[in-house]
Amino acid sequence: MKRTEGLMKRSSVPDNGYELYFDEREGMVRIRFFEILGQADPREGEEQDDSVRFRFYDIWEYDINGIEDYVRDNSAWLLEKAKEEERQALALEIKAIRNDLLIDADYEVNKAEDAGDQIAIGNARAYRQALRDVPDQAGFPWDVVWPEL
Image (cartoon, rainbow, N blue to C red):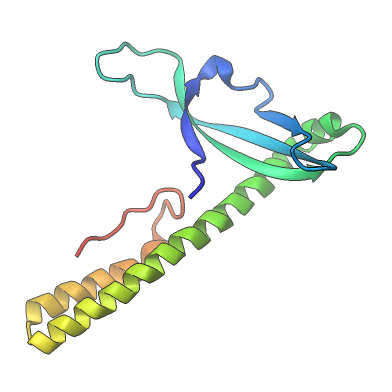
């Protein structure tokens, strides 16, 4: 899974909120948008500094004449487009993990039913339902709380 969050000094965040990367793909420009999520907690034993938590979003656009002006003039729309693409890609990854866990959960339900253990059946079924509900979590797909059996 691509890591899109991290810590950096606030002074390292580009003033315009994005950076352009040329020559990574022929005829294309990668635009990386930075979104500040808040002040970073100081590391143990260190004092608070200007570090921030951030998330970045990448989007590819054609390398056209005036790309800098195009990005500047359309940065809000491009950022939302990049966020949505990232959200969809991450959601697919999380759902794939969840689907693998659902296979295991079905096994646990069947095992509990075979043993006739009503408490284990209830726990396994609740776990399986919690897995099904993962996409409905408020922070999905960025902040997923995985249920435990």
